[in-house]
Image (cartoon, rainbow, N blue to C red; front, top):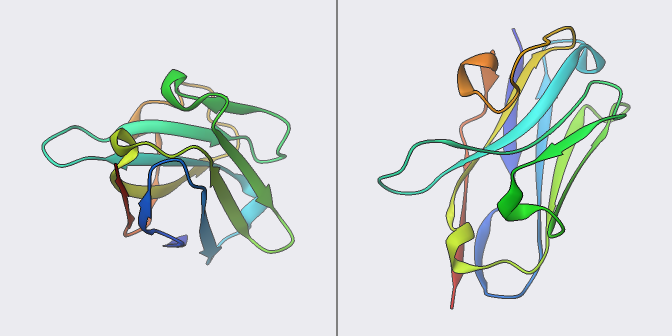
Length: 126
């Protein structure tokens, strides 16, 4: 059983940067692909970004390409989401998720992910 704990959220103004962290415990971190999802009030949970277990491949939703960067440090059992040029439409609860390294399906699909954190709120004011 993998436990995921997100941190780094907050209230920021549009245009600034923020970095989210997700610390994993309870499993071999390098056995898992990792992802970030977000959910705004009244909306479905949305895929944001994913990174393969080795860090060799990354994926992003179109709306964050060029602004967000996902990375991982397998020695620290942590995945990060660097968010630049934040906009009010980025406001959401951000969730960290993990799934097995051999999963070969659609990583943007929430049911593909086995473990979830409790979420961290990001609020961007205009």
